[in-house]
Amino acid sequence: MKCRVCKSLAVISLPRHNSAFCKEHFFEFFYNQVKKAIKEFRMFRPSERILVCVSGGKDSLSLWHALTVLGYPADGLYIDLGIGGYSEKSKEMAEKMANLLGRRLIIVEFGREYAPVNVVAKRARRSECSACGTIKRYYFNRVALEEGYDVVATGHNLDDEAARLLGNILRWHIPFIAKQLPVLEEENELKKKVKPLCRLTEQEIAAYAFLNRISYIRDECPMSQDSTSLLYKRALNLIEAESPGTKHFFYLEFLKQRDIFSVSPTNHDRTGIKRCEICGSASQTDICSFCRLVSYLQPLKT
Amino acid sequence: MKCRVCKSLAVISLPRHNSAFCKEHFFEFFYNQVKKAIKEFRMFRPSERILVCVSGGKDSLSLWHALTVLGYPADGLYIDLGIGGYSEKSKEMAEKMANLLGRRLIIVEFGREYAPVNVVAKRARRSECSACGTIKRYYFNRVALEEGYDVVATGHNLDDEAARLLGNILRWHIPFIAKQLPVLEEENELKKKVKPLCRLTEQEIAAYAFLNRISYIRDECPMSQDSTSLLYKRALNLIEAESPGTKHFFYLEFLKQRDIFSVSPTNHDRTGIKRCEICGSASQTDICSFCRLVSYLQPLKT
Image (tube, rainbow over all chains, first blue to last red; front, side, top):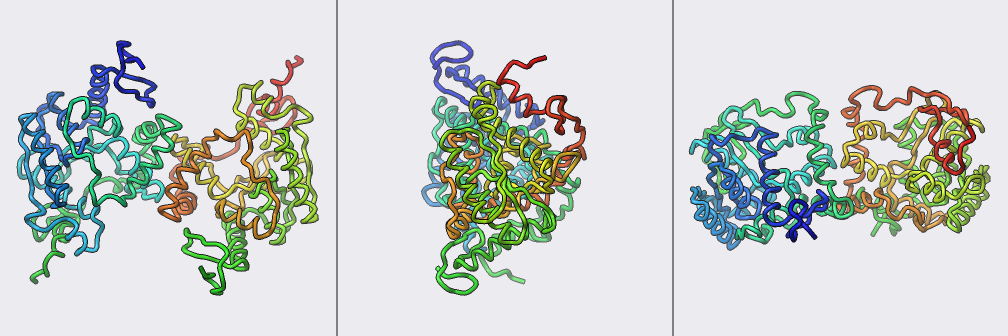
């Protein structure tokens, strides 16, 4: 197997691009995909302050690493959800990357301040994944606002986005489909959110992490075993194995065609924002979803 | 496992309906699904003459059987494509059903008149499945016209329709998505086409055939091994196993929401029909796709 560019020994084969690359040209390919996503979807400029949401996994750590290599000044945010050894180990990985890059890592100790996410989820009768999502979205925005960042970046990859799109389509959640973009613009006090790895697969990001000797937590989150997104990923991988490029085309062509899902302009805006009566942050309801969630931890004093 | 209706011993479990049925109430369920499809999509009335396209498989034979039980006067059409023993055996099954129902079976000997479908496909540099589709669609319409049938019915089931929809969506074939309906209305000389089994899964139809002791050809067509529709079915079955009802919701909810894909009214009409210069049948081009296909068998005399 030879590199498509220089014909030296390839280290990775990419069937969806009908290509193979040596280390050097794989990095070139990788950075080009990141740059293309940033440019195509107008994610940010080098003058803007970027906050990368770091979980300790390969995607978010590779994103932080790649943005730094590409000259974007990005800091990290780690939210400790109190999932025992898993959270401890993830935090270590995030701290290691912060040291390597010489950038700031902000740590939010949710687990210690409130309770482990599984306890919160149980009290609120929600799934762990759903409670985790609420908590993370809340802090991403709050920390970005308080610390003066312009953009919040997450490590969602092509597999994540394609699986989410498939799930929304199988259930015909039209408003969710309409707003499934790699960029959500800033509006009111909701910071701009971007997904610079949306053109790269899990396998490509794993290869980037491996070739850069990035230490990351390899286990799936112990809470996410039953996640439907893993099921949709398995189904898409089954198709991808026999028909390489399906995932890529499915998601990226959707972004071109997606206007057909915008039945009404209210489908993808973020209007109707009020202030949460408890924490004062932007919210679509009187009490924001984060404050509603943690309210289950103790009887509300009325 | 008990029947949901009468609590006697169930013979089939239907996870997607969270149900199980005894033989009697399974038949009731089955016929209700067929009647619902016929009524909901205005497929035909009992006064109309129906031509069922019979392949010898469980779907088309069960369809012919069920329509007869429900009081619809349906005859059968079998097209012998010359696929060796497979075609011989399929034809036998079709003839057996015609005798059982006491209805007419029209047989078209394509394989003998022209050549086996794999030879035609090879000469025309097309896949067998694609050549087969062209030939079948041609005769379905031509025989219905010549013999005075009002409607052509095919045995496509929920798995077929959901797999086709998934394939069209993964490739964002918007015009194909827009016209993927269980009914195509008559227009010019193109006869009305309907799919009365579109609310029933393969498994349910296999159970119907088994419980009615219908003999059918169990092997997949030897030409269709690489068919992508089988791949999409496997992917959907993977999801269905963990999330029963997904296929059902995906396809039937699509039919309600599908207007969003009708970007322009020309997406799903059958206008622009001319006459084929060779056979005189309705065609969108000067020479119809059937005549173009068989023209590869011998140099055209001009």
